[in-house]
Structure formats: C-alpha cells, structure tokens
Image (cartoon, rainbow over all chains, first blue to last red; front, side):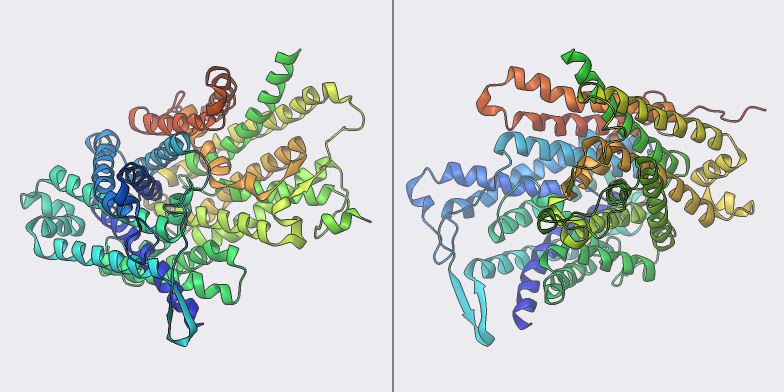
Length: 302
Length: 318
C-alpha cells in the first residue's frame, strides 16, 4: 500500500507536469488540445534524436552519476525544448490563428487538434518506426527507502525535475509581467484585451510555455517507461482527467488533479487488474463531471 | 477479376463506414452532440452480434475460446440485437453524460469507449479477451461459393445502407428532425419553445448508437473475426469523424461520400506506397496515412468546415 502510494506520487508528478500546459491553453484559448499528448511524444523522441547525436562525442555517452541516462540525454533537454516550443508556436500560427481570425467556434479547433495529433503521430511512426525505444540500455539502479519501498534512482531525478519545472512556471506566472498578463487573459479575455494586453503576443507565450512543458514531460515519461509512438496519446487520457478534476485554467488544480490521478491509478491495482488503470482515470473523471462540473479544485465560477 | 474483387472488398468496408458516418451525423450533424466515442457503440454492436450468432465452443476448442454465451441465432437476429444493445448502452451513457457541455461530453465519450474496449480486452469469460472471437457466421456463407461471396455481402451491406439512408432522410425532414436541429442551433431557444431538450438529445444518441451498432454487426460478420484492438480510438472513432467532416456534416449524402473518399485514401495509399518505397521502408511507409488523414481533418475544419457537400439550407418542403 505505502509502496503504491509512492509509485502513485511518481506517476502523479509526471501527470501534473503534463497537465499544466494543457490547462493553461484551455484557460486562455478555450481549446481542449487533443494534440497535447502527441506533442509530449514528439518531445520525448526529439530528446532521443539529440541524445543519439550528442552521444557520438565520447564522454557524453557515459551515464550521469548513478542514473541510467547519459550526459548526452541531459544536454539534449535544451535542443528538444527549443524545437518543441517552435513546433507548438508553429501549429498555433498555422492552424488555430486562422480559426481565431474567422471567429470559428472553439469546437472546430477542438476537432482540428485531433487532426494535428494524427499528423504528428504519423511523422513519428515514419521517422522512428513502431518499435519501442529506450534512452539507455543499461541497468537501472535502485534505492531502498524505509518500509521496504524500492524506488529507481531515476525516479528521484524525475520528481526533482518535474516539481522544479512546475515551481519555475509558477514563479513565471506569478512574478513576471508577462505571466500576470497570461493569467489575466485566462481569467477574462475581453477585460484583458481592453486593458491593452496584446492577445496574439500572449498566445505565442502561452503556446511556447506549453511547448516547453510538453518536452520536459515527454522526456521524463520516456525515462520512466519507454518510447513508443502511442505513448503520448495514451498518456493524454489521465491528463484530461487531471485537468477536468482541477477545473478550467487552474494550475494548482491541475497539479492536485495530476497527483490524484497518479495515486488513483496505482492504488487501484490493489483491487483491479493493472490493465484497468486508464479506465480508473476515466471513471473518476466522469464522476467529477457529473457531480462537480467545475472541477474539485476549480477556483473560478464560469 | 482481381481488380473487381479488390473493388468489392473496398466497397464493403466503405459502405460499413458510411453507416457509422451516418450514425455520427445523427449525433453531431443534426443534434450537435460531440460523440467522440463511436468506437464504443461499434464494439458493442460487433460483440453482441458475434456472441448471439455463434455457437458455444465445445470440446477441445472450449479451452482456447471462452465466451459468456452463444445462441447460434441467424444473422438478421444478430444485427437486431446489436442495434438493441447499442441502444441500451446509449441510454445508460446518455443518462450519465448528456447534461454535460460540449467538450466535456466529447471527452467522457472517449473515456466510455476506451473503458468498453478495455473491458472486452480484460474479461476473457465474456468474449475471449484480447484474442477475440474468430470464425463468426457469414450470412448465406454455406450457400454461396467463396469466390462470389464478397459480391453478395456487398449487396447485403448496401441494402442496410439504403434503408438507413432513407429512414434518416425521412426522420430529419419530419418535425422531430427539426427539433434536433433547433437544439443544435440554440439549446436555450428550443427549451424555451417547450421542447424537452434532454429527452430529444437522448433519442438522438440512441438512434445514432443503434445505427452504429448495426454497422458494428455488419463489420463483425464481414471480417468474421473481431478483437478489442479493432476498437481503438483512431480506427474506431476518429477516422469516422474525418469522413463526416470531409463529406459534409449535416448531410447524409455527404456522410456517405466522405466515407468512400477517406476509405479510398486510407486503403489505396498503402497499396500505392508499397509499390514506390524501398522494401526497407515498407513497414513505416503506410503511416503516411496518419499524416494524410490528420492534414485532411485540419484543412477541412479550417478552410471548409461545411465539407464537400455540406448541409442543405432547407430540409422541409411544404
């Protein structure tokens, strides 16, 4: 039981990180981005690409301290994040900006985002194939915590990076002028517009921020499990659940929702076959939608 | 001969997809219900008909194939029960989710469809779990020589397609159909006019689901084998959304046209690509179809949301 809770927190940290970008875009643009999961996949595969290139430089192929991954992977966070940000902004400019201009209903963008998801996944299949990939082939070291809990050393790294990134986003949104403008936009787009906030500029920031977060989430998820083209799509379902649980546009809510989803999925294995995990996330989500449509942690009244 | 056979099997699958597409048109095109869980009704229809028409395995086979029941019913009864069960599932889902707003309904529908698929995958006692059921009954299968079978099955599917098409065309031009479209355009107005919005939405959900159930049954008896992987969101739901969007949301002829166009792109690109690309790339090249379908969906939603045909302005003539 205690062990499952610890695993739940590890999984929940990655879900939380992934859901921050999703709820941000949802709050600001009304778009429930179905391509978010596949953007996570792209982030993970970009890191695979760059770490493969970097590992050709001899010393970079050595593992980082006790961790399973190499220095090359650690360095490849930077180019992977940059490309992921570029991609997120590009998709917004190419697809969603046009829809905003023509005043299309947000549902249209929602359906279009499924098209984006397919196209991204198609490219991943074409470039990397359907096989599983790993960042490193080596053995994965374990740490032994009290109460007989075994944790992979990598998982400590995952937790630190996940919550570090979340804290950075939190500070950015809370302390900087751009961050405050983004929050204002999420709260009340019309009021923000008349207050002189340049909406299109802010949307570039929002998509860029989402691009950054999906890349980090994708790489961490890739370290935790393995890389396959469907990884992000499957991961998207608990993300949706976490975001809905948290309430529209609420970052704190998404973080709490992510932890709840991680815990619920892992602890459910006490009673259910593990293959039911994704269904558990959904059933919780549907129950929340029925009884608390604004989310449990939702701060705003629509 | 080879070309004709190819065309027949293409037309069967395209017609089955056209049935799903028309079912989705009832939900999304006419009532504005964002059903992203087509695959769930597809699965319920396919499994129901498979179970009702197959024999309970006996002897050595029983150790390999498990199923909850097998009534050995005729094909048409299987289709009937498929529609019925899909309708019952729709009532249950509708009671739970139809009060939710658009995007929430869509996401819960994905969730329900995935839960149904995972359930069939895990519960081996019900329909043999992940291995699925094989050797399903093919209507008139023992009378018609295999070489001609596809042509006969095509005829059966087209009869279903036409029956559903004409029934829907009548329904949508009736006062009932106008209420659905009124709900799609403005729910509050429809409610203010004294229409029970929830009940009409439920009727629409059930009708569309029953059509999808029939499509599922037709698929099961055509492929003669079903397993849970068929009902994954991509293949069971989103390809159908692309078909309806491309053909023309809110128009049954558009739904059929879209199914044929998208299925042609889907099945023929593999065929053509494998002739062009080097063998070493052969396992990856077919995934270009994902890109094509994705780009189609984006292009149509952003540049031509009406689809190729689009909805007629006036559906009722006095």
